[in-house]
Length: 346
Image 1: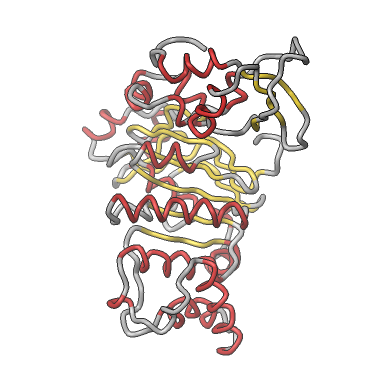
Image 2: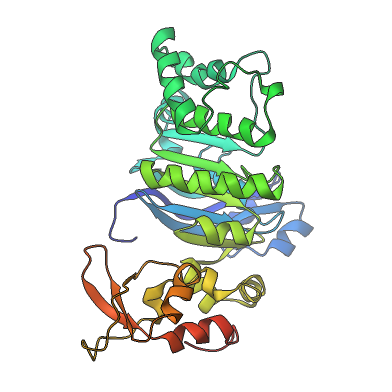
């Protein structure tokens, strides 16, 4: 992701709550100990966060309650002002923006979806989706036309004239997603958007979200406390604890190489076949004659193709996005991933 343009850039971002936060941070010279600050009446929300999010990337920020993940999102959207550090959106320094400029940035570049659906109860689905467009000054007919496009995009056709009380939780969340997409944001902030839903609807919404991202290619910061959700959705995952980003990496690298004991506890029960891609277990081609007719993408998740690979009598060619063979995968490697210990090396 580093070769792509950075849309979001954070440099040594701190958010500390408390009357003496700035003075304590200055005295600490950036070396913040959460316990020491707490004893002095301050709460550390974000502790020295530095990272980039590339154009079209989905970065999932996860951690347990109180880890600082939502505070970090609020700093990046400047719903909360950071205590120290720099945050850039498309190269613009957020802290340098005046209120009017910040409002324009939010209206034109940012979309936000939160855990609470925050739908207007007296407005229909269509009216709820069109509302932010009308706030921007777009004509009623144009805003309704755009809202209908969004209704189709999120699969709510036939319900455009329903009121929120007539919708299920999952349908209400789709309205919230459609409303945030109606303004065509470049950056999408989602804070625990599916956590209020029951497990079945939650998985449906994750599927829908992946479908939307597959076609829209938004730059996304997605906050969750659910590691399975993070693994399923993320290009990269940032795991937070006490305001610190313990590890920021791809799902596969986090599972294979946890950087800290805290991260290892998150990963120890994760079935590796649900996370790892074929490219992780592929070998170089050394016998082009002994290959099966069945081919597999290097980006395929092992779990989705394991059965077909194990059914082959020959080595399976691995192909890239240009359909070029870039390696082979041996059934023995797949068996090792499926039945070996999580502590075993590949």
